[in-house]
Amino acid sequence: MIEWTEQHLMLRDAIRDFIEKEIKPNLEQLEHGDTPPYDVLRKMMRTFGIDQMAKQRFQRQIKRDKAAVEAKANGKAEPAAERFEEAGSTDGAALQLIPIIELCRYCPGMVTAMGVSVGLTAGAIMAKGTLRQKERWAAPLMTLEKIGSWAITEPGSGSDAFGSMMSTAKRKGDGYVLNGSKTFITNGPYADTIVFICKLDEGNDPRERKVVSFILDRGMQGLEQSKPLRKMGMHSSPTGQLFLEDVFVERERLIGESEEAAGGRSGAKATFGTERTGVAAMALGIVEQCLEKSIDYAKTRVQFGRPIGEFQLIQLKLAKMEVARMNIQNIVFRQIEMSAQKKPMSFAEASACKLYTAQAAMEVALEAVQLFGGNGYMAEYQVEQLCRDAKVLQIYAGTDEIQTSQIARSLLGGN
Image 1: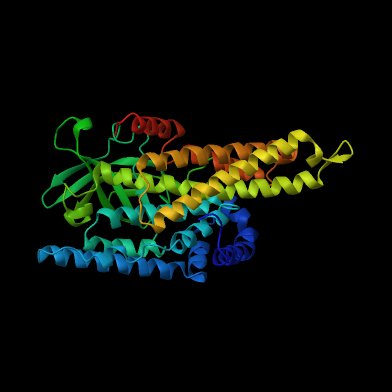
Image 2 (image 1 turned 30 degrees about the vertical axis):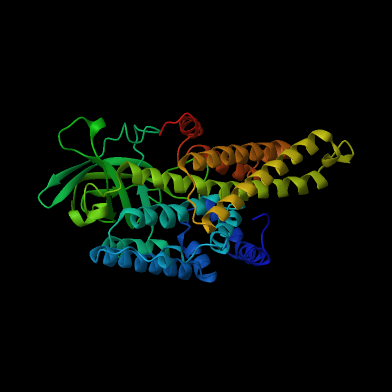
């Protein structure tokens, strides 16, 4: 794929029209008020049939899963046509990414809120859950009927998510008792469904404990969800803390319904990979908007009797922004092609995509602020918000430093 098709551009224009009518007039409340983003996201999903497409994908997946279970019970292989029926077209992935790109031109936080619910939380259940768990919890998350959170980060863990994890699950009768706290949890204050990742406490050394995941519901006894935390950017993405004190859960809430199939480190790693690949589309939206704003400003801002776009240093900034935009767009196109061919991106490649695109988005946003001068530092000019929002792309789903080490380990033959 080397360019957007006519169909893609039609969807892009329709999304832009929706944003112009539904998001821009409410941007102040979404960014600085007390308005959660979920209602407008649901409206967008309904308007463009995204919710119906999600339901169809869910039903196809459930159909395949049931066929696989039946085939295994009968000692047969899953039919190839069922496994590969969607391969070959780039439209599916492109139509999922275009709304992300366009939302990130104005409200990157909304993409984070939607992605964690639809992508990470539902994705974790769909990847490792049982049929019963998928049908009970995943379907409402995929349409934003329910809001989801994926809870792994703890106050003392940071990048050492597994090694420093202190949250525990202890067996009790036919279930488990959960204790611990989580922080920096996207959708945490409003989540209806939470994938809670912790360690199985069997009295052994914490660093040797098995990692397990559970599905929790809002209002469970002993579960507390904090109010939204104040933060530097991504204000339209509510972030909170979770506190669990002696929360009892039945075994049916253990993802996979067995300690061996509960996802563990591999399941969390796969979810991280999904999150990292999504950063490219977010970065593209931020970079496109910063570049567009900068070009307009360079044409109209006059200094020393000339538009600043006539000065070579300003031209250099614009040229570098365009190079970054082209590179990120090509990465997005590669992701679309790989998705169409059903070729999963390796964990190292997902890390490389995130490392480059996050850094490029931050560099472009900073250059945009510099180009705008004093105006760029003012909230009235959107580049100020985009610069704050871009920074977290270098932090969540693994910092730049973590991406670097994981890419290097892969190159050196490690895991």
